[in-house]
Image 1 (cartoon, rainbow, N blue to C red):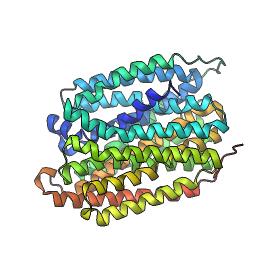
Image 2: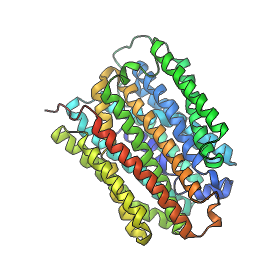
Image 3: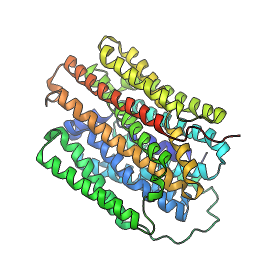
Length: 453
């Protein structure tokens, strides 16, 4: 646990720490209308790299691959800190994300590797608590750093923590049991990366080119073709990047769908909630951190309680079913009545939302790990990270599309705060739909409990 906490903290906080700093970054480097690209670039890169680290970790040792992913993250963070232009910052976020994809999945897999199923529910609950707290801590931490010393120091923070994490990782014992030789699936990786790039490009273009236009349709068709080729190639490869047998297990498939929906909910809210306070309510960066701080406690508390309940009862899916349904209800209330709430009242609603969002990821990880077995812990865990990253990318971009559509193409600076607040209500309504869909997916997972003594 001591070895994986620092890397997990870096991997999760990197997804959200820039949320409160996005307006400052966009104002300094330009491209205010495309600020979500800084988030989406990181998430897309994590989606591409997660299965690579998971597959190689299963074959060559998860400790070594986790150290490699940390080195990549440190390099990307340094490039982000010194980026002079918006395109270079986005490119640096891609490098950072290529490391981040391994950090999260391998941290979970390492703990699962060293614990029995009886212990795993409790430890995965701890990991989920750390992960959710790290994600929720990101916005207030980012806001405070931006207000005091500037947004570039947000990325510099990763360098000392990353170096400490590498030292702690190499205190773990190396792999003892040898693995069979593996021919890495470079063709599958290329196809997967191409599909990811096509999908993210379409989502980003929707903000400026409309939901449906000729170029978007062509790109969607291209992405669908690449996905079909990927499915066929994976079924024929000797060592596929994504073993098809995993997705023939209903609980694994539905758990990944749940991770996708949860990612759309969690990261889109964590990205746009600070923007709501800053742009609709006129809150400055330092106060913004205070309004987002209670969210940290809500998220961590929800994940910790869920882990303990799973360990005590063995039940799993009931918690995200109830929790995600509550999220949808709270978002609907925020959409319909939020304009009458004070800033602190809205902060408390967000805290309750994140309390219930904390019911999900421990269930996803435990279900998948129980189904895939110890030999495929790395790739099994990585698939949930890929799904979550795809959901986070699509959810964040879709929320951006909704916001742009509600503003009728006008820049945020050109409209008054009342109009901006109404536009954010449309975003909250869309995210409420994500919550309802996620609750329905959780209810459909066949494995509803773990065999715990």
